[in-house]
Length: 281
Image 1 (cartoon, rainbow, N blue to C red):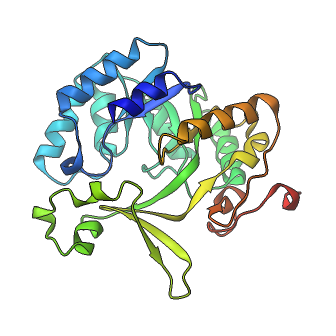
Image 2 (image 1 turned 135 degrees about the horizontal axis):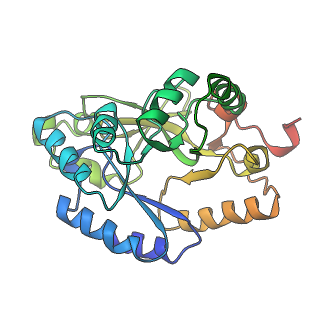
């Protein structure tokens, strides 16, 4: 894990998110080690963001969240409203993660007033929706001095549950899961009866069955999106990040649509759709 972040520091990425967002049981670093890693990487020319857990299930999870947010040296990604509340009370700027349900301009305005510095759009929403909500926010007089980020590559995080699907797959109780999800670094694919990949199971998280890929849609983000997020699948994902950056800088599309990828949500279509360059009008 540390090796991956070291490689990311030497890559073309501008922002690095780190931290355990899905389940506190499976984290391979202690809280002190996460904080030390974040502070150490922060001094090496990248913006480092420490992400908080999305679904807090125990008093220990809340205590850990409070401990993280007591550190005013780092920028945090708030993945639930509890984290937003803590960071706002401390008057610290924060990133609003895609797991927070922000679907209208009034919510956007309130989050900005609470201290939002960057907003990651919910993954199931489209470019047109983004245009509409930004327009509505401006009409409300919302301070628009925040960055806009879009999840652009990886398995889409669709839902979170108190039940751990991976431990159920292994016939283990959640209370004695033995961190079995770590055996499946890319999750478990759930297929339909016809053999189509529907979902990817990642512990308590349900992800898309297809890999989301908006590299062909980078030109449509110009002037609208500030940051695109690459959710790493392996060390090779750093090469994907560099490919995205070249595409953005050159204004070109690579037209790499495949049968195992999708971009439907961005086009306000069924999420599993892959609309390639030639089909876009």
